[in-house]
Amino acid sequence: MSAFAAACAARFGDRARAEAPLAPFTTLRVGGVAEVLLDAHGEGEVIDALQLAAAHGVAVTLLGGGSNALVSDAGIRGLVLRCRRGAIRAEDDGVRAEAAATINGLVRHCIGHGLAGLEAWAGTPGNVGGGICGNAHFQGRLLSEHVISVRLASRDGACVVEVPTAEMDFGYDRSRVQRSGEVVISALFRVVPGEPEALRETARASLAFRKRTQPLHLPSAGCFFQNPDPARDPLPPGMLASAGALIDRAGMRGARLGGAQVSTVHANFLVNTGGATAADFDRLARSCVERVQELFGVRLREEIARLGPWPQGKP
Ligand SMILES: Cc1cc2nc3c(=O)[nH]c(=O)nc-3n(C[C@H](O)[C@H](O)[C@H](O)COP(=O)(O)OP(=O)(O)OC[C@H]3O[C@@H](n4cnc5c(N)ncnc54)[C@H](O)[C@@H]3O)c2cc1C
Image (cartoon, rainbow, N blue to C red):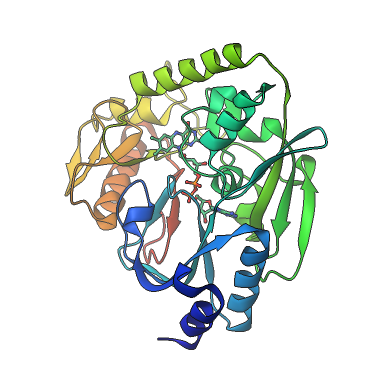
């Protein structure tokens, strides 16, 4: 056992595990092991873990719900930090949710307390930390539209700051966290009073939409690619600014490499049909990118986060 793994075990007990498989903690169900996988409860433990890693010169990778992550088959060296047990509470003019809170838990909390704003996000997998990092989106809306401020820790756990939304550099699939490497501790969401039954109705409509349009019966990471931005990537005439439509028109719907397949239900979902490896998803993603580029001159960019080593980089 490494000195770092031993120090983690001494501080966090059996919530720090050495050489722990990561596939069960991702919705794609692929990937190798974490050198040390730690479940941290609350801000204090997250800060302790970051400081411990910094003191040992160990790299830290954050894993939330693992619903937007492709973990390398080679696993992840260093510390894989999972924020767990996210508290949700009323605060000033909003609701504060810790990074570990699930988006669904936050939606349920708000509806149960007659608070409107987030109900349409029902059914979005993952946690608040991951949702803020990638600025989750649904039906043209960004999660950041509901955010007042975000509490961030520096990667070494040395300082914690409350950052107003205006300084978060939020955009489509973008936040400052992706550049700075800061760790999301919690976020304060704007809500207004609402009638629970009406909120529930909106939530049900979102869930029904997902059920109708997404291959929820198979492991996936949601949309694998970002939708193209026509201002940056000119599209062929009549083509929707939709990665799924481009992959579909490129004839890739249903294409399979190993256990990974372009979903037949939604062409921007790459699904695990059983026994897939991360390398299968990598090869399939590359062939989608190449084919779309070749046929339409549009370069697809990945929406998922690749974690662990990827010697060839992104396609
Ligand atoms: C069936 C399905 C449907 C989906 N539908 C949508 C959708 O409608 N809209 C949408 O936007 N996404 C969707 N997704 C993708 C996913 O749900 C979101 O991107 C979600 O916000 C990811 O959160 P997560 O906690 O699972 O993040 P992870 O996958 O665990 O991590 C994603 C990134 O965030 C980083 N991260 C995680 N926690 C922290 C933290 N505390 N601090 C700093 N960085 C952190 C990770 O290092 C990684 O880079 C879908 C996924 C699935 C499987």
